[in-house]
Image (cartoon, rainbow over all chains, first blue to last red; front, top):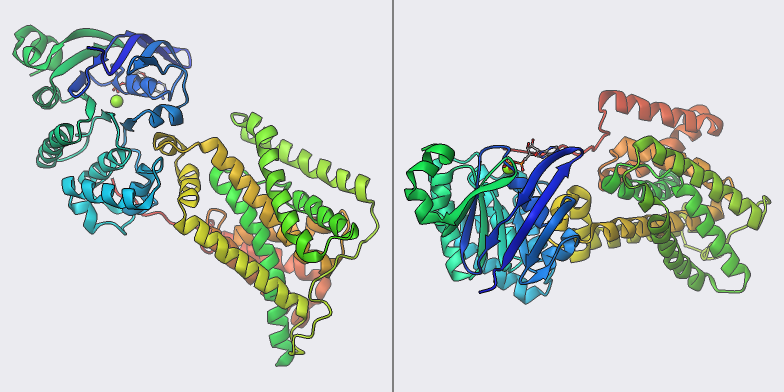
Length: 237
Length: 289
Ligand SMILES: Nc1ncnc2c1ncn2[C@@H]1O[C@H](COP(=O)(O)OP(=O)(O)O)[C@@H](O)[C@H]1O
Ligand SMILES: [Mg+2]
């Protein structure tokens, strides 16, 4: 079966420092793929590369077509929703405005309203916060808003950059549970970046482990959880 | 008492002109952190354009909207063809570009239309408003600018495109991630700023006469108004313009005479900025991590 997303020999630079040294990853349609690695390994850079946010060399294909060199706005139009590092919420705008912006590419009113209701099905708390400035939400609520904003695009693929970052364990569990529901009910594939490997491997079906800008281990999530060597060398638990 | 009311009203009218141009400055500043020093001269070209249409025999009410549309296109073109290529240039080189544009547009206006004062019509000059206190043109100025501000408010607050322009200004990276073409939003901002400037120019020209130096003073006032209200706050800039217009007029009439009113107004601005560096209504953003 043709993968939904595939990168081949992805390299990227920040100025003269190289951050990626030929990253090859594959995301199958319908599944959740985890991208693991220590701080500074190049996870965020890989997501940025996929979204056209930095200049790269190598090949990226989505649904069999090359998206390399396309501007971010056009990549988004293909149905790739990125919940970036730091959440990318419009903190000065209200929750409702953030959600409306998420649906910017399909601005028809009845559709937007229906999509918002669908999103509130996953995150009911946002409905009570509609008129509130997004910057005043709690960290967990902001992460929920960021995921909801991405859902409003009706994406085929979601890129999630450390959704657990800075949140209390209970909230993280809740958000991860809802992410599984979203994956199943919306039929949206996910590429999940995490430093917390245990958490990500429990949710994902495939995983890639990167170290200093290169994939060092790839395989089924279940196999990686059980591989003593991988666990000790890379995952630290 | 009558004189006081008249002076306040007249101050509000000129103030609303400053407010329009101040809003044009804020619109570009908010999305790029640049002050378009050429905004006044772009408005000057727009006003000459309107004057030419009228001289060619167009009725005022055709020339007015035509000029607004043309100025919008002019603003978009300047951004797309020129400013865009300086996107990653250091801040100071853009300042040089803006000052260069100011001089170029000013010289262009003088070259095409000459340096003689030209009379610019007001559609209401000969109408009787029924109230002797209020000059008809001032009433017209207030109605047009308040109407314009209301339209802009509705546009930015309630339309998807307006929301997208705000999003692009607040956070371009996130805006791209929801599919907004940020480059075009900037160009649209330039277009709206150009249109606002055109209105300011056409409204002030009947009061001060049209010549190539007409907008220099107005730009200074607009700039001061925007600083007073807070450069990042559109509503503040409008309030700043109105306050400025009224204070300037009252002080000119009652305290120090009209020659010194610009000086006095600028001193007020400096005093406010010393106490509140973000301006009277500079935005304080609530943030929590
Ligand atoms: N904006 C940037 N400018 C310069 N270097 C960067 C930038 N972002 C990341 N890097 C560097 O690139 C490498 C990979 O970073 P990143 O992709 O953020 O790692 P991760 O997300 O896995 O923690 C690191 O060495 C980091 O220091
Ligand atoms: Mg990261």
